[in-house]
Amino acid sequence: MATTVATDTFQRRRLSQGTRHTINGLIFASPWIVGLLAFWIYPTLASAYYSFTKYNGVRNPSWTGIANYIELFSKDEEFLAAVYNTVYFAVVSIPLAIIFAFGLALMLNAKIRAQVVYRTIYFLPTLVPEVALALVWVFIFTPHSGLIAAPFRAFGFRGPCWLTCAEWARPTLVLLALWIIGQQIILYLAGLQDVPQDLYDAADVDGANIFSKFRNVTVPILTPVIFFHLVTSVIGALNFFAIPYIMTGGTGFPANSTLFYSIYLYKNAFHYLEMGYASAMAWLLFMFTLIVTLFIWRSARLWVFYAGGEE
Amino acid sequence: MAVESSQLPPTLADDHSRRLMVKRLKSMVRSVLIHTGLIPAAFVFLLPFLWMLSTSLKPDVQFYSYPPVLIPSPLQWSNFPDAVTYITFFLYMRNTLTIAVLATVGVLISSSLVAYSLARIPWPGRNVLFILTLATLMLPFQVTMIPLFIVFKNFGWVNSWLPLIVPHWFGGALYIFLLRQFFMTIPMELSEAARIDGASEFKIYFSILLPLSKPALATVAIFEFIARWRDYIGPLIYLSDQELYTLSLGIYEYQSQYGAEWGLLMAASVMITLPIILLFFFLQKTFVQGIALTGIKG
Image 1 (cartoon, helix red, strand yellow):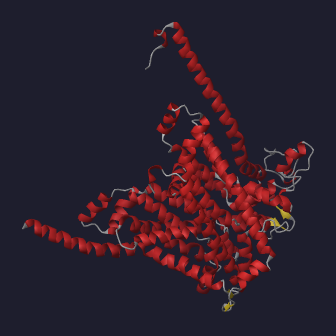
Image 2 (cartoon, chains in turn orange, yellow):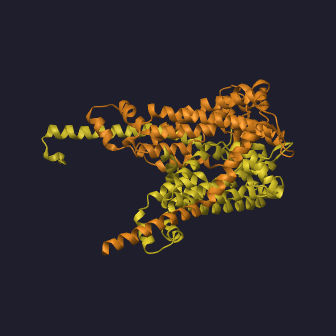
């Protein structure tokens, strides 16, 4: 008897608790449910609609079908330049960033003195506000008279023209982007510190040398970090905006070589008030980001190693 | 295993100490090699900040001197007081601080509430909401940028701080994710026991979960504060009145048609950067854990 009553009240409690949980869950999540609708879902749909219109942000948008998309690919040379610069930047800077961040983390992970000091120093450029960083780089990379010219002058060379000529501006920006890998170094370092020591011990027993240990133990264990770095830096590289914009005021000088996708999009939206055209650019970027990210996710099965198959 | 070498026959003892010496030598060579890699790298990473600092203490004539001067003499300290009067530096700093603090408080409150809902309350829609949250991380900001601008324009919020603050009071996807992961590690039994005692969800959130999550909350606070302190594109889009400018817009005023006031500009840059560096220095552990935490989503 007593047990039946107990189960009864227990079940009644559980039922009402289920409803209570739903109500509480919704209340606690309500800021984000509103935020998601207002700041993410509505703008995304609106942007899709604008992309098929001519819209200056003041008058009502007028439907033009796929005209924006056609114009982007057929007539707009600046757009093509922006695509080229952005893809160039992503393709060159991302692998280099992975190599440098991984390499520095490896060296830091060796039990050495002053590890924390090095880590702090490597992180420093990541903390400097982009405006200050961009301007100090312009100053350092002034051809013939900036700090960067000093070693060239010492040997009697003129040195490259860095940010002031089209053929050097792109590689210079890649070089500058390699300064801001502090977060990635910390990620790799955290990953390295998680590598179980017994894996190395087992490799030692098998007589593995340092290179095969690196290839067969360290790299596989770190592939999830590389994966994470790859996905986030693709998104980051495609959104590259502040630094080149500050350096050039968004002019793309010299000869459109620093005109990145985000800059051209921003200029269309807020300088030329071509909001529909800029929205079409934003959606193309979105689709491209999605395809590349999905491709990386799909490829993950082939090369990313998850210990214990978790997550 | 620990055999005193004196107890061993002489040849063995020799062998032992020789092996020990080789081992020590090897590790010494290794650490020297590693430092020869790390030190130049450290110099390269320090360079922008060092040069900023050095230029901030230089008189005009030394900016482009060859060979370059790292430590100017005499030190031109006057660049610092000049920098804060050349532009309305403290006004911009107060503006930046106001926006950063209000946004940080908002994002902390809202994100922790939402994360609590996702991690600690079993309700039917929470997985869908969580997946949507992660999906927004993939969305380039350019997609929402234009419609949001239109919305805020219709609200009459353009050229005010509201677009830079209010959205943060509705939660940030990355922080919701981060806090959810952290809340999940706290034993559910704590919540269940409190529920049996009749505690409300808000009480559990406020007096059990939050006090146990201080490190994660600190991480969110620092990340958001620094992100807002450094923000460039937000103020660029929304602020046009000079009195509303943040530091990242105001700093342009050191540049004129005659060129830049490099000494003043760099002095201002040092003053903008220093607070963040100090924050990082004192809260280094929180930082490092926070960054590692963002990476575990794999």
